Length: 129
Length: 107
Image (tube, rainbow over all chains, first blue to last red; front, side):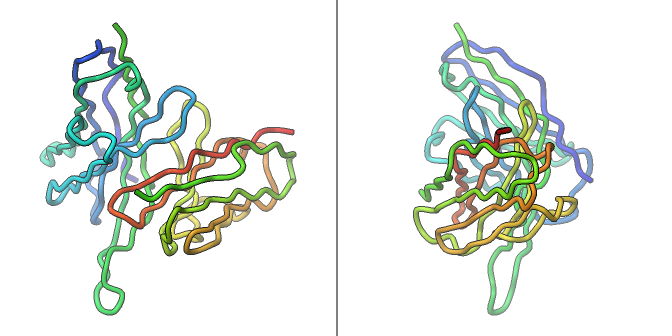
């Protein structure tokens, strides 16, 4: 089973940037996305966006447009999420998660997704002056 | 964006109880819905995808149903390990949205 291992905790000042990494322990021999999800203290889960490992295509949540960049370096099976112009309410645990999918053809053409089945352990980011 | 609303926000129950959590979508999402369980300090765990498909290794007491805009997660007989927060999540659109969560507490 693939594991996702994230980088360590970060403390940043307001206005700074943070870059969190997420390394896959082995190849996933299926099509998949890597999502980034965050959770502020005592709050629920907030989806930030996804990246396609194959193409590098990305899709960001509207709340983060212009501030988030997701990239990948497939030679080392590592994914990155960079968030700029940090504010105190960006203090949260940031998770990466894998979502596999199949591409269907014929009458049912489209994507069949299987949910986010593998998660990283989370990276705490604290934004404080 | 598709909004997801869960109810209740908190649920108090006893071991052995049958528990039902509801999730409503702001527009039809067909059956593109997943359920997750999260315990304090831990990453979420996938329970169900495609509204009713049980993820491998998840106990059979968990089940999901629904389509369109209304969905339910049912735990047939609550066990001590099930006290946690549960989230629904839609994946109809290229974007994803989570519900606000339902905390299942010990009564």
